[in-house]
Length: 563
View 1 (cartoon, rainbow, N blue to C red):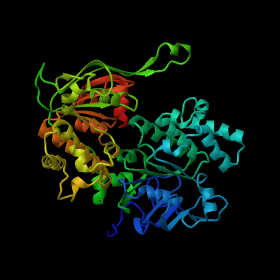
View 2: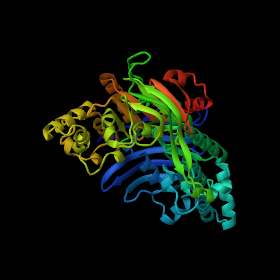
View 3: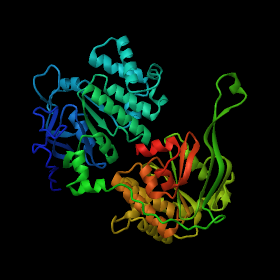
């Protein structure tokens, strides 16, 4: 591939530096200056000679889709990428005990180990895998403090509790004694931030710090990082593909595509006047509303799904003597009532733990529930055989296509699976023809992908795998699709493509959707009606534009404002 020249906005100093507040010239001594950074694996280059700088106290966002090289770039600065060949320079100017800037890429391992965590710290994308499940979070933070700051064990524990308190975790002394699995996603991320800031680093590398969090928690974590960054005067290199997050948090932005740095400048300049085609593509990837308003059958008209006072309760053991005689219950969904007409989408939005996915499973007849719930005019039965007709009418597309598609089955076997259950009289040739047509309907043809039906899921990108999942659901011609976070695992450009595909299929086939998501932009683009859920209860519902443009409940107002 021919190297893509980087676009530097005119207001940016020509050496790739940066202007500080008020448009002043670039600082003479940047905190970190990266020149010609290249990274290769087994001779294949994945980062191609990129240059960028970070000033003390500055927030720089490195953005791009999955595979663009942004995370490898950040990890390479601390030489945390295994089996990689790294070249170039990354001169860091804030190391204690050393004269002048040092090149992180050529520093001896013993000296670099002293910089990691003390001068440059990192927040990883998924705290559940970054934290040790065998130790409580207080001990893990205290270990960093003890090793890097030389405090006694008792002083380190006290400091760990203080650091947790600084991140806003309630009851920090009790949370310090908790194990990672006992904390919520937001609390685990706060613990990671406390650990990263334990030594008051000069530079923080934040790798997708909010990707796994709900929209309200994303806002809280961003506010927390901004507050701590200003208080400690540290610089932040933010790795993300979320442009809303960049617009809200960063001072400058650098855009990566296929390992090349294609554009950089201040956030205001790049968003107002993007110069590179890839940057324009990212900015234009916000979901667009392009749905028909469906058919108005009037009161008493046909419905694809109808629910009245649906509740789902999970059994919970009661501690102590009373638990010998009876069990308790946790109400995950309480008295949910909704209708889904033909050709329309009901969006269900809320944070993790709000009950929206539980409601989706109940709608699919996969969880016991109380109340009334009919799909395609029939009620779910405890007798699995009698539900066969409903299961043909109601299909599901799951959140992560990589885990929902069997790695041992070919694409043809995956897509044909529904036919083998619901139309077993078809011969092999007819099944292959139907599978090929279903894949063509979602934009995947044999001409594009030779040997398509014989390939396996791992041979495709995330967006292509999700198209296979949609083809599998559509091959038996259902009337209703349950979409459980169908785009949350995808990059913004791929998300837009999948949403456009779902909109087209709805217009052409009159499909109804039950859409589960925490993304307000997706709801605004796709839904006709919306329900807002929190702690198992429906707080607000109605026409989507009415609810999102004029929310009444305080929780809905927070969701919309944070988005």
